[in-house]
Length: 141
Image 1 (tube, helix red, strand yellow):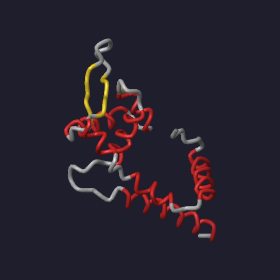
Image 2 (tube, rainbow, N blue to C red):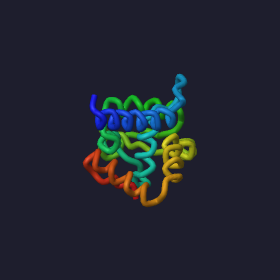
Image 3 (cartoon, rainbow, N blue to C red):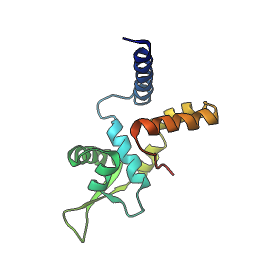
């Protein structure tokens, strides 16, 4: 393995470690990374809630894992699931107060706090590098 390949692998492993440490709670019944992503997505949707299809597109997975994750989040009392009155095939998903409170403990905030320790210009550069890796600009605002 050449030097640049070793550096790339070491960098990838550091990113993996950062994410693994953020999502350290792996106990049975713990909220999974996908469930956290779904909670974040719902919180960014308009006040009326959002559909399962929208959530699946937003987090970049198919409908089946979103459906399973939403049922688990409903058991946690973090989301509400209601049939759309105008289109019975659609399920409207909303956050409960408990779901909103959970987001204040979102593991991704751990990574955000670590990033805050980096000099502002380096943070911007790091974000641009990540956007380049993903081939897109992150629409966070």
